[in-house]
Image (cartoon, rainbow, N blue to C red; front, top):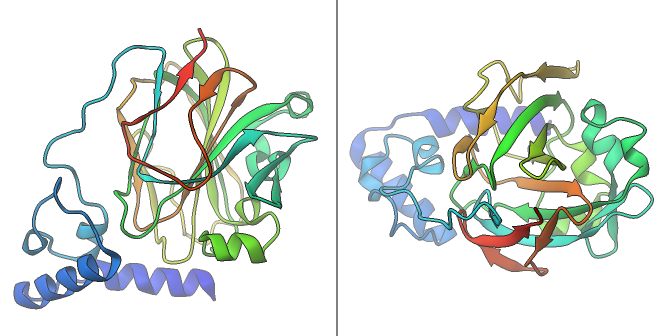
Length: 267
């Protein structure tokens, strides 16, 4: 039912109403969710709710070009960060998820024996919905795993154990410039009708996928700040990296912006 609801919500979001009606819908959405539109076009410029959800900056944000600087891949709220223990990470205080279940075929059994640092960033309906590379990366593999579409809001994380590993998700296995491994995991959620990736249009989410889809890449490099794709509503991005590869400057409930410095890459 959650997937059907999300699909119909997604279809509604793509309807292009007459301009006056659409502008009214857009303005109500902006008002209700308290969107900050200072970096974007005005409400009347978006031909559908989906266009508003996936709005682009009028001017790309600037960020520190130093290779040691690690930037946020998105707007959002840091719900939790820390180090895994016995293959488990915290979604919020008191609630955990399994790396093995979350990452699936993007991580080996041998690698699961190691400890990892993690950061969970929740994107609410008011946030900018695109995601960007947090540092220079080589993308090695993308693994699309079907699943539920539970809401990823904090109250649902409190209700559903291991929620991130139960929802539909795409895990990118990446290598950083310092040679360390990092995973960027994009978690689907209620009303998130699509997750899109600029580097591979084959990745089709919310499509009733029952099989795990694995995509391998050779020489796929992305630069820090480069756009990787977008959600079509709010969701969550998980960052998981080899222990001590990144020194994070994050705290629970910290509001962050895409391009903001959130850590240092240990070279």
